[in-house]
Image (tube, rainbow, N blue to C red; front, top):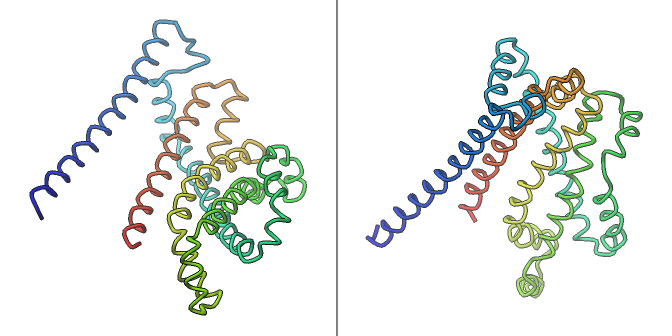
Length: 262
């Protein structure tokens, strides 16, 4: 390893530590300011709760064995919906790429479905699937599937034209072009779509839990609203933020590992 490379790595590590420091500092300042404003009566403790109240609410949920089951249910729904959306999105994107005529026919419908508020379909989904986990998964699937299809399909369309012509001039089959060029050249787009897909999946799951669930973080938030326990509502929101952050970081770690092999 050269001296310049060592200096670069040292600078890179320092920059990462600086970024982490300022991120933590922003969170700490926000929490302290929130606590102070509530304690001084500037913000209503009933409406806005406070970091200390949220902390004790979460601790009480843990002591009552009433938290991890809700986290488990929500994570299970997210993982099932995420894997289904990603798999179906990849397959449908491949079909659209191989059938440009079909892609042109479906393009306005995909755009229309993507822009449609999925919560409006909630009553119909409940009637079709019942008030159970199937409705929640379908709600999340409706949100993440269209985004997966559009993102991955656009990644396929971004394949280098000159490389496509080269493969065709060498009499490569469609399967060879797909597996050796189109899909590998879209790795970055596919991996990047995971970040968007996982966040949209979480949104869909919580929307579904708001409508039908008797367990899960969404249920905790709805229950807290019904009994006017705003500490429970805010605790649910904070837990969701932590879950979202962890899922995002897992995708980032996966992305780094996969892109090393490209």
